[in-house]
Length: 359
Image 1 (cartoon, rainbow, N blue to C red):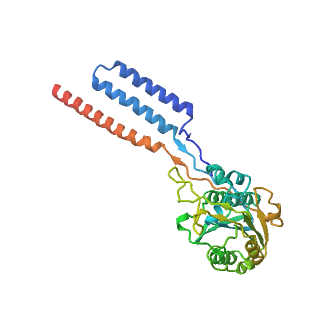
Image 2 (image 1 turned 30 degrees about the vertical axis):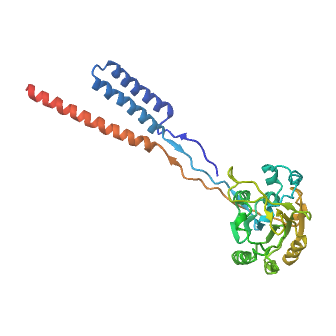
């Protein structure tokens, strides 16, 4: 959608409108200079203002409505499922991980943010949406509960915007996580999608670290497999693991940068989260897709191999509503015109009264 600045749509040719305004303004200025009484000077000053307001009305300023451009969409449905538990804040992803590995070093917020597993997942979602432009996308995140952040849409920008603001769960609310948390919501969503468009191909990308901290064995993803034609499980993290910054829900200047603690040790130490590739591989097997360990952005060929957006259908753009601005000025012009009418009526009445007295 695009927006434009104010444009002019004169009710008459622009040169004629300006000439008319110049003549009226010149006459009013001449009469203002010639006026001797303060009341007459005020009256002609208001008439000059009325001419200028009339000029604005005649120029008819408008703000063109935003126009929705044509959209190209294919039949492919792409479902993203992202782990946002605290372990996805572990700082063992990409080149920036080296800057955060030393426990004695001061915390660098920029390096800390860039080295998280969640940063890697967000980068991959953005890259996949770009590569599969024209598909329909949906975004689901999960920690203690699952949430559909973006319903199925061909608006790629909506998915990328929602992805960019994903954060780890608030640390104080963390009560253990299960990697199968999104199965229930995904089952319902995929069933509805299949009922609405049974012939559409669907791929699912599960992005997480496989860490199961709920104390229970995870459930199976096999119920989702019949709805899918492909996808991948993308794993983030290392066997050595990484520390996780606490998250208070704000991350502003008042937030204290401290690491999540492991209180099972005495004294407590920085908690370390490690990827569980065996668990992620099991999810991939249950879904009938491949597993890929992601350690840095880029190179998604093995992830997207065999996935095709399909034939695109084009939806024409639709013009937005034009906003007229002249009426705002016309209201003030009307008020001044009414005052001028009252003044002229009073002057004519006074003139008649004087003639009557003279007769």
